[in-house]
Length: 376
Image 1 (cartoon, helix red, strand yellow):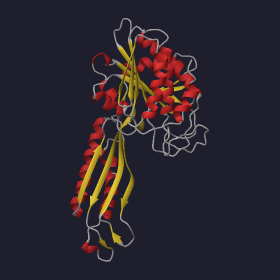
Image 2 (cartoon, one colour):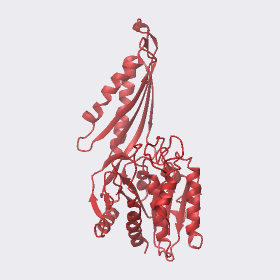
Image 3 (cartoon, one colour):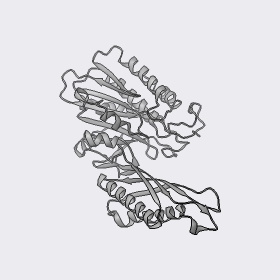
Image 4 (cartoon, helix red, strand yellow):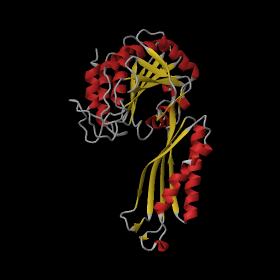
């Protein structure tokens, strides 16, 4: 039987950025090959650093899929753990080491006997940076007999207790869009502003005006977030900035609102540039980070199942403005994502984030029980 805590700690030490998860890929493949060595009903295929494991059913009517992400973050770990990251400036601060360990444990449980229906396990790269789920889907990984009818996945959540499972029958996570804007003017001496064209002033006007999108263009019942967390302009106090670069994010609960917000950001940036006589470059990158929209019927079935399980505290939870590329997969294949409590005071992406490992045994037991009801 797998030592889940040992596996999680080994994975925690080798976080890698998306599409560069080479050591992680090798570790996972070794575990998967050992688990499936004597299972003639299992097929395995890979795509870059991604892995797909298929348990072929003995009389399949449908194909069920479980997804885990495998990448880490460019964060310097500050947990003080004896098994802290060995990779400089890399950390599993989003809990993907927990996700992978849970997937391996669930795979082990589901391999006890050949299922009636097909069951697929997706070990997906690049959730954090390149929407690896979208890349694998568009590359044809799920074509033909590998196309699931239902897709399930989870994300750990620090502010929920071990034993908590939380989801809803509508939108769980927001759709996100990365925004990069570069205003280009004419630099010059601070004493002669009439000979220059100040990109920093234009960027400042943009920052204040862009806040009107949420206050005046977004239906307050729906909501949206527009945040610019980075502004770089100028070199010193007495030189007028030639360029100003802004880096921000959009988060909305519907794709329609995301499109509207993108449109308004572009219009405001172009309008500010025109009014100040500057050039502007605008990059809006949403990619596969669509809203995570649970299928209402499947979500209700999942919630009903967990609500009846001893030891599970099911929570019907409100949407969160966090993003997840599982939204792309759920836009193509019906399914459900849910939160799993890991009971730690530090938030996701925090350098001290350290989950309660008791969630591993709990998660494997409860999730494998649920999946067995889908593949019988």
